[in-house]
Length: 241
Image 1 (spheres, one colour):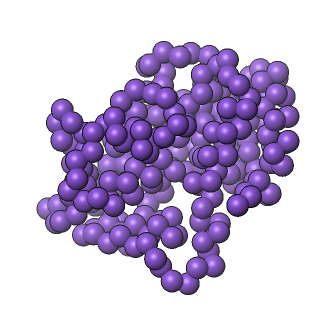
Image 2 (cartoon, helix red, strand yellow):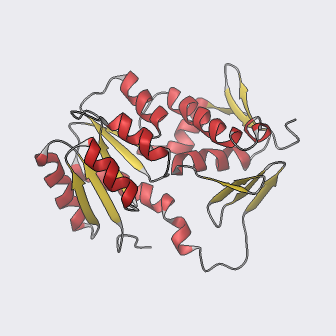
């Protein structure tokens, strides 16, 4: 199913060469591409325009990528791929804690970026092709929490929760097998698949953000995601209270 048409992407990098290179490759895929050379401009554009995806550089003068990502996440769940010249573990963790969905270290292959973009858009854009559905086929209802997979929507006590694509995938993956314990390694492999090659703390940072979002409406919904010490996580479908 083609999703490039009418798909708008924002590229943010202080290097014109990087912006020009990514624009060329993404426009070849028929995406509409806009760019920004600094964090301040990027934040303004990201909040004023509903982009389908943002490719965001971490290291920029002034407002860096982490700050931009954190500010965007206060208002929007736009999919974000972080670019950085730093490959250190701490930077990856900071990126995911800020709400990044994927992470690519410079130097990178433009083709790899295109593949990551396509994969993230496929998940994030799935609701565009489900809006004509009149019957819900995949509805997971629990105390306090409902996941409508056809609508790609999570509600807690009737209130819509704004999740990033990875946060949604992680919650759905756990909720589809209540009471089953999943090791971090398995979650990283099955939820992130080939799209991200990272350490196990990636899972922890996403669980943390997911719990925080659920807890803002109902702490008992957050408590359904249980930590199994030394192993990983599980979802308890019963009354978490």
